View 1 (cartoon, rainbow, N blue to C red):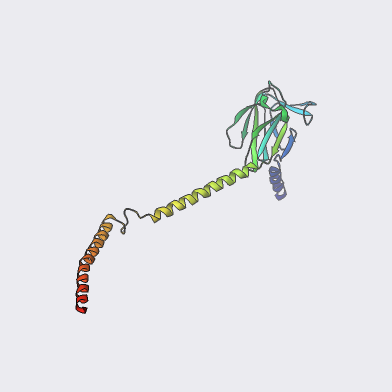
View 2 (cartoon, rainbow, N blue to C red):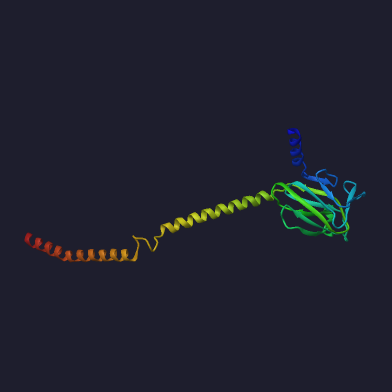
Length: 213
């Protein structure tokens, strides 16, 4: 039915985690495995998702930056993180910064659009409080930098081609070695003729002067 198809498309588009601090109960997140929800007063939302190796969570999110908020534990576990088609990388959760509430950066400076994240527990203990999604400002600066670089290359190539066109090539008909030699000979010949004519002109002028006297 048209209404069902429209609702299906809408739900597929709407199921994306939007910028902000999102809890583990966000409806756009899909949790797989034996995750355990455990109340804890230290958690910002009052609870943690406790995972074991093999447990995973995946979701589509909008923004440029993605942070994981986990329980601060010097013996914390590790997770494998994959964003879009990038290679998965393992991250140790004991690296969370206590000064920023146990946050650890998962992705930075992505294009401002929709992205897919897959987080899989590789070593326990792992206690997730939520995710922070943001729209940064450096992604468009990088894109502008790429555009400026491309324009610079285009201008450089145009200037180079124009300069090359102004310099006569060795194979040019007008600037070949034979042509230059012929022109040189013609100039020398003309100069010789002019030199032979000058003495006669001088004698003619002297005879005219004598006639006048």
